Length: 435
Image 1 (cartoon, rainbow, N blue to C red):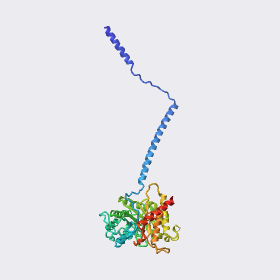
Image 2: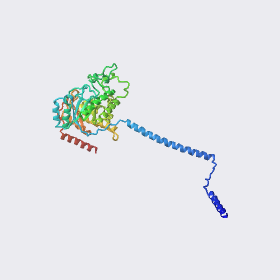
Image 3: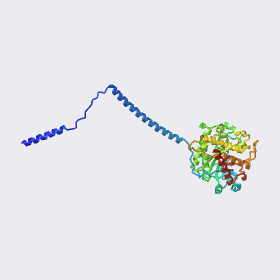
Image 4: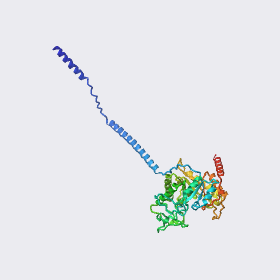
């Protein structure tokens, strides 16, 4: 019995000790905060929340600015690249009638003895006619199609076999034939009649975007048929007096230079998709002249940013007496060409930035005698070569000669060896002057 009582006593004692060893409750401190301390803590918390809010707003503003910048960049038009090798062009203009005649054989034969390596051939001519039977698989009807060049594929094949670079010339906004097919595309007077220039030619209204699609389809067909480059001529508004009578639609709020630039960019995109080079002819007088530029709608630097090649028509006969300080420009072809191209360089240099695209300048030179002028000189070998020399001396290295009847004396042109030597000497002289 005594043993049992002792065991019970020990058990109760152990239980009592274990119970007394449980984890104590944490101490609670009741601080009596002063009103000043409470106010200070409240201000600290408010300031922390405000700083967090500012940081969040700054982050959101940065993200918004980045999104807006990306949106702006997406809206900025950029010239698409043509992934093809370029050719240093030295060429002449060929009419559609010449291209479709036996005379073409003689021209090709004589070109072999010169440095000439390119032809600009009429495809949509000055009368608004497409000069060969163009087929677009039923996707597009081509109007005013003739058969002046009866076998264009054979001609292109022969020229390419000779190593020639081929440029299709398309007369753009002057079109005396289209008025009969699509009068709604044409420049119209208030009474609905079609405007005609002093030569009786009708002109396309550049604001009519249905025509943009049409001329782009013609250009694309030329690319498909084997031309290396598409060149647009008359990419401008008519400037004759009667244009004051032309009524443009209410929606035509875009000014002349803007709408011509938009058109050129549209054509550039369409032809880049075909991976064919694209060039435009422009008035030489728009270089450095705001008045001439706004009259015709051609902005020299904007157009240079939109095409692969810019072809200013800088014929000495087209400049009035006193231009570039020259009494009669037609009588001084070297100085006139040199001065015009130096002006081109200066204008384009003003807008060139970084790696932004800028067209190669390839001028049209004068291949004819301007006997209609009061003060003129015959344009023969000396004048042809003086113009070529001026191109090289001004820092450019491509050129085209214009003769409206394709009548050329091929002895006026250099041989390949002579041309290479002249160009090399001009380059050496330039490097020496720059040094």
